[in-house]
Length: 340
Image (tube, rainbow, N blue to C red; front, side, top):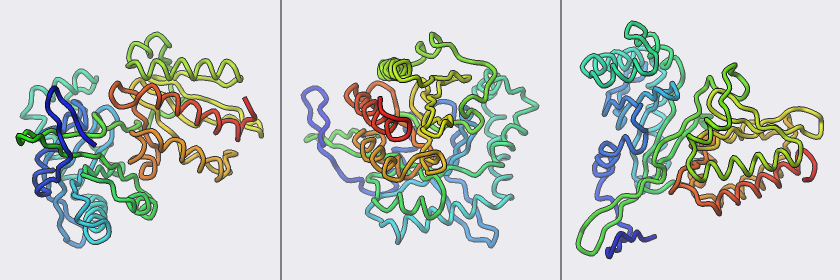
C-alpha cells in the first residue's frame, strides 16, 4: 500500500522499535480514543502473586463508561512467544483489587490537577462529589484489551476465543517518503465501544430520526436510509433508543431478533446472538462473516470482538462498502426470516 500526499509518495516502512510505536500511540492517543478518554501512560500493575507488568497505558472512556488496558506490540515479536504472554499477564494483574484501587486513585489525582477534566465531568452531569463513585463503578467491570499493533496476527482471533475476552487491535502503520518524511496510518480514527448500559430498547428517552441523522456523517446517513427502506419493504422495524436505532427482525419461529444497532458513528454487530438459540445457523453466520470481512474496517475487528463495530465515518468506510453491508445483511436476513 502507498500513501500519496501532494507530489509525495509514501511507501510502507517498518517501525525501528516498539518504543517508536509506543510514542506514536502516545502522541495520537486522542485520534485513537477520542477526547473524552483519561489516558494514564505506563502504570505498573501487579498480579495477586506479585508478578509485575507495565502496559503502555490505562485509559478510561467517559462516554462508554469502560476502562482499557493498552498494550502496544510489534507483530514480529511473535503471537505466542511474546504477545500472548504479555496480554495474559496484564489481564491477570487487572483482576487484582488493589491494582484497580490504585488506578482509580491515580486518575482522581490527575483530575484534581486538571480544570479541563473537572469541566468535562461537569458537562456530563457528574458532580465533583460523585466522580469517585462513578470511577469505582467503571472499575468493577472487566477491562477491554486494546492492542495498537503494526500488523494483526492471524492467531489473535483464536487467542481471543481461548481467553473469552475482547481483544481490540488498532492497526498503526508507518510510511516514509523518498526524502525521509514520515506519515502514519491509523486504521480507526476513534476506538468505538458500545456502552454496556445502552443495549437495544432499554431507554425511555428515544432519539428522533432528525436528531440522529444530524449526528451522522454521510456514510451513516446513507446506511440509515437504506436500512429504513429495507425495513419498510419487508416488515422489519428500526427501533429508536436513547442514542441509536436497533434493527429488529421477526424470525421464522416468530421471535424478535436484533442483529445490530446503528449509532451515529458506527454499527454495533451482536455476533454473540448469531447462534441456533436465536435461529441463526452456523452456515448463515459463516456466510455473513465472510461477506463482512470484505469491509476494510471490520477485517481486524470481527474475529476478536464480541460486539464488532463497523465505522460509518467519512474516510473509514466507502459507499461501496455500505452497499456490501446491505447486500450481506439481506442474504443473512433471508436465512433467518424468509426471503425478501
